[in-house]
Length: 334
Ligand code: AVJ
Image 1 (cartoon, rainbow, N blue to C red):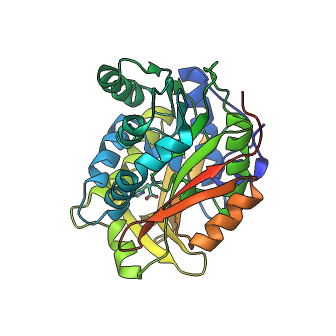
Image 2: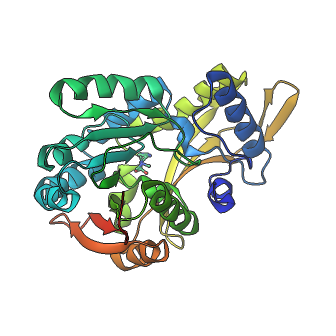
């Protein structure tokens, strides 16, 4: 079951969905957009960034000089891969939540002894399947079992071999949730993976405002294009009449909440229509499109404990900008 707090915090309309048809996915997208634009603070959940164009733009973001999280996390994973491999044990199955281009997972598969399966779960089906095709060539002995699903909703795993189940949730995607929803999500992941499983999760650390704001408002304007692409997607898939050039990308640190917020700001007073629904925008009014929480290691580990996980290890990069936690769950496993 989906914890309601989880759906709410992402400004989703309350409902549950997984592994649904394209028509159903579009209907849910429409419902989320109508719901989100009806709120006092207009909002659209960040999971909708990742259509084909958005997934490609996100891959570009990961290579930007200003966007440090990807580089820091890869540096950490290279250093701790052997220990994660030992934690996984032989014949383990690796389950990745929000797999995207599946690049970091290679570091773990390389370090694992005879991994049985790789189970990527991603909302962007075509992007994921292309990544899995590339991965299958490099890892012929590993069963590739992609699951096209919204992992913020309840997910069912396919049948897996007897080895340990190891969840992988990199990139600080956990930071898209409010701390309360993140705790609920970590508990949900524990239920999905089951007793005796492990979880490797990346999270971004609180740091200097200038570094953070540059990472989310890069000089090349790629993050702006990524944010604005959401409007083009809503126009195309939901039939809205957004004028993307009448909105501006905004990204800033909300220090009180310890999160980067991304918004799309209306440059003038205007009205946007979706079918018979009309949404008025004042000049300067925004659509809140993403939260990206920045944690202290202590705060993160407190959430993890509340969600029923035990800490195995926490690693950071030399600058102390990003962290990866390896967690375990009690029990016999299967
Ligand atoms: C994929 C959610 C981890 O929050 O840093 C990157 C998304 N947004 N630049 C993040 C994102 C703008 C990213 N996560």
